[in-house]
Length: 194
Image (tube, rainbow, N blue to C red; front, side, top):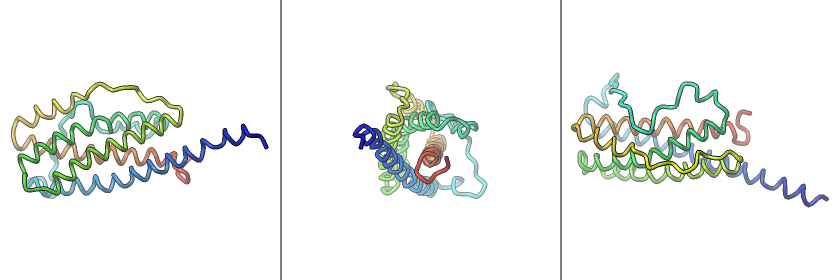
């Protein structure tokens, strides 16, 4: 037996386990994000819950929708983009929670879900960064503090409806990026597409 063969083979099961664990976390958070968006809409009143309502897609600093070509990029590059988006989300979710605390102070479950979402997306982002490191794909390095929270707060100060639209947009982006991360990790997960 070659002891070097054993030591070189051992990182692979560890990597597969890390990918599988992170993929499972992303799948769970996708379900939570769907529930958060539904609950958010329930607490905003009309026109948010009306069929066909499509609020303006406000730009959110430091965060955008996944690009149309995202799926065509190599998996490590997609995971880097996912990690960057996940890092931008917690301060935005915190702003939405503060605004909802003012607009819907009795919506305790919504406020708790927003707080949980910020914490959970931080954990998912750290797990994606760990997968990138285990793959030997360096992340983009330390990110500057996102300006998104300051921009979001100034947008929200424009009034109640813009604050509600901002929250709707942030919750939607949270769902999109967590779902995208789940799909990207699924490309690497054992039994996933090659």
